Amino acid sequence: MAQFVVRNIENAVKLRLQRRATQNGRSMEEEVRDILRSATNEENVRSSGVGTEIASLFSKVGLVSDIPELRGHGIEPVEFEENAVQASKGRGQPHRPRRIMSKNKGLD
Image 1 (cartoon, rainbow, N blue to C red):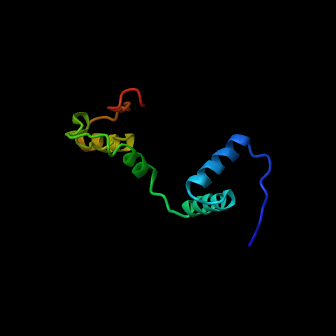
Image 2: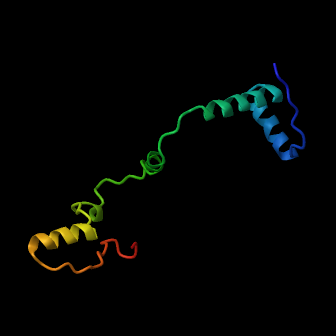
Image 3: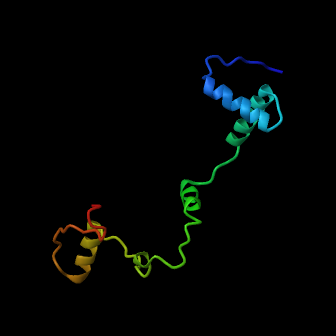
């Protein structure tokens, strides 16, 4: 088995480790081994996506109804200049470049 020494541990950390070891009925050395085992096992656990993690943080908030400002809005295709040129040719109208405004005010 490998060994290593950790130097310059603050006294407060050492005291908390001793208390934790006493509460768990172990020596301080065994407690540190257990902490290290747990920490390295958690690294191997595959995490889900960021969105899933954020959603899980708020899953117990207690929303019971839909959020009205997000419901009922259809998805509208974006119009780019190329599409506008093709559409104007099909209608027999001259092409006039125009700026397409987003419905998300302030996010353009």
